[in-house]
Structures are given as C-alpha cells and as structure tokens.
Amino acid sequence: MIQGCGSDVGKSVLVAGLCRLFTRRGLTVRPFKSQNMSNNAAVTVDGGEIGRAQALQARACRTAPTVDMNPVLLKPQSDVGAQLIVRGRMAGTLAASAFRSDKSALLQVAMDSFRNLERLADLVLVEGAGSPAETNLRSWDIANMGLAQALDLPVVLIGDINRGHVIAALVGAHAVLDSADRARIRGFIVNKFRGDAALFEEGMQRIVAHTGWTPLGIVPWLPAASRLPSEDGVRLEEPGEGFAVGGERRGRTRVRIAVPMLSRISNFDEFDALRAEPDIELGFIPPGRPLPADAALVILPGTKSTIADLEFVRAQGWDIDILAHVRRGGRLLGICGGYQMLGSRVSDPEGIEGPARSVAGLGLLEVETVMGPGKRLRDVAGTLAGSPFGCDKSAFAGYEMHIGVTSGPGTRRPFVEFDDGTTDGAVSVDEQVAGCSVHGLFGMTSARSALIAAIGAAPGHLDHAASVDSALDEIASALERSVDINRIEAIAHGRI
Image (cartoon, rainbow, N blue to C red):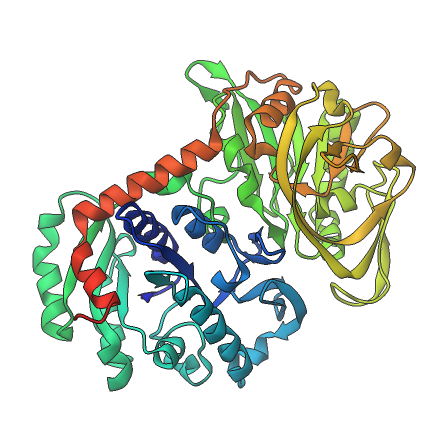
C-alpha cells in the first residue's frame, strides 16, 4: 500500500508508474483504492464508474478498468455532502458528518473488491487517500491504516519535498501514529526532488535516525506527469490558470478557448488534449473573473450539480459574458451538465442533486432537461453528426456519465451520431452553439482536429492516447532508476 504524508504528494502518479513498471517486468498487476473523492471519473468495462486515477492506473497495467479497482467513490455535490458511488453505482449521498461515523459496511465492500483483484493478480498496488497521520479520523478510516490493518498490508510512505518540510512530515507521521500502524510502514520514498538527489542524502539519514524506516529512494521531479490526466481539482487551484498575457507562442497568435471553472466542475481532464495543441491557448477562468472577450470558443464543462452550477454561472456574471460572446459571433459548446444549462429549463422534481426545483436555463438551445434517479454510464463512439461550428464530420470516441433526460426540438439537429444509429445533443440553427452529453470528444485526434479547425486553429494532429502511454513509460523508467524496486516487490510479497 502506497500512503502519503498528505494529499497531492504524488501517490496516484507513483502508483501508476509502478503499475507500468511491474507490468513491463511481466507481472499481472492491478491497482486499487478503497475510497476516492473526485469529480473526475471514468466508465468501467463492467458498466460502472470509478475515480479517473484508478482508470489511468489500470491503463498503466494494460488492462481495462473495473469497479473493484475503486469500490467507494465520493463525488462532492456541495460543501457539506457528496454523492456516494458503491461498486460503480449511485447509492445515495454522504454528509460530511458521516466521515466521523461507522463505515464498517463500506470497509467490507472494499475488502471484497480487493480480494476479487487479488485472485486475478500477481501484485495489487493499493493507493491510500490523504494522510494516515490524520489520526483524528483513524477510528473510522477505510482508506489508509484502517484498510491496511483489515487486509494486513505492508505500507510504503511518500513525502513530498517540493512542498518543503519533508523531514518534518515523515518524522511527524512516525510520531503521531500508534505503534501498530507505525510498524506497518516498511519504508519511505521522498518524491518530487529537483536537482541532484545526492544533496539530500543527509536528509534521508536524518529521517532514518528518527523513524527507523528504510529509505527506498528519492524520486526526481517528473515532467511527464503533466501529460497524465489530472485526478482532482488541485491542478485548477494552482497559480497560472486563465490566459497568459498576449497569447503568443513561437511568434504566432494562438486561438483562445475559455472554460469557466464551475464550483462543481467534473471530468475536466478531458480538455488535456486541447492544452497540447500548438495553436490553442486553453484557459480555465476562475470565479470572480470575466470570460475573455477575445475567446473563439467558450466551453461550459460538465458538473456534478447542474442547477447549483447554473446559479453559480449567474452569480459570477458569466451568463452575461456568454450571451455577449454569442452576439459577437463566438462559438459556444456545452458538455454534459454544461449542455443541460444551454437549454430553456433544468428541472429536478425528485431532488436528485439537491432541493427539488426547476430553474430557467440560458435559453441558447431548444432543449430542456429533467433529472431522474438513473445514471447513464457507457463508452460510446460515432461521428460528429451535424455541422457544429461548420466543422467536418469526424470520428470520435468518448463516454456518457450523466443523470437526466434532455429533449426538445433542438435534438432534431443532433451534435453526434453513435455507431448504433442513435444520436445525442443539439446544434443551434446558426451553428454557433452546440452541446452533447458525451465526455472525451477531444481525446480522439480526428474529432479534436475538426473542432479546432472550425474555430480557426491549425490542428496539430497529436495522438493524445499515445502521449499518455509514453508518459507512463517515462515515469516507470524514472522509478526504475531512482527507487529500490526489488525491495518494494519483496515487501509486497512478504519477504521483508
């Protein structure tokens, strides 16, 4: 089990890299995370949904993702509660106060899923959540030491030197853990080191002196990690989001695409492929800032709570910016919840996403949405059906992950046509505004190239999937050079 001294210390990336490394060594490897909290999710081969990080780790293992890899997923809907996904399916909501309550039933679900994977694999790599040093949560923990104890798992602890105070973080974890939990830790890794690792050897020995834990390596800063899908909103919270002044690159003016940073934005990793396009400047616009007037395309992204985020759009004044953008001739694309916002009305009569209510949409597409208890989860493929933005018909592959049924006259001008002949989405009569329920449209080179060409950019024809795979291989190779892999394998198999 790979645990960390905090969130965003690199656990997900290191597990993905180890998955690829041990897979390259000929082992059958499976990833596992008992409980995840993220609005970035992926559809599984068995028709459920799991955290995006575990889907990436499955890819690193060169296997299809399954619900057993992340049996408990919490998708935040508000500051005080989250949608609860158990083995890939909606199972209600979980209030923030429930984190301090008995979760033995969820622990049993997690243990059963782990055993399912264990029967299939030579090695299961388990990712923790947050930090085991949050001892105030230990009694109810099913994601760190609580799980490690229940499954009798050895632990490797990760410290992030890029944050500073890494010695204090690791030594502090040793100080606050009880003796039984402390004894589970078989070694530690210092992650995200910039420069010559030999300069921190004295630091490593100081950690050993205070903890007695075995040093397993110093992992360098991994530039390839930036080419991997982001698991959660940490990347969006970092400085530098929005647009650079001038929008210049290699002497060219790039075409700007703006994405409002909704309060419950989901699956925003689907825009990673746009970031890599040489003629595109992608900006996530944070709350409190207007949408840029010079954007060629505004994308309303997916959201975990459509009505709440529609109100959020209005609170930021983004609805006014969007209407002005369309009046100026700009293009507008809505994806999933963003598509639902573009219609005339969004209704939630059963209170699926919050209080039962009905609110007016932005009124830019002739559709309306009614929320219901079922969630549509499936991988899809097809072609861009109409002529959104005047672009060419092109093949796409993606996935659906939404509640609610969207209907109305606008659907007679669909955005996409699936391989089975059915359609989805809507395109305005003037072809300026379009939307659909499909995530992942930009991942496939053909559809992405057609869409960005239609807004005046020169497509780079980049293979995004190949870029992700090469990043996994680069990370695996870096770990092979910097970490005692043989010792980690021995720890996993109980030889140490």
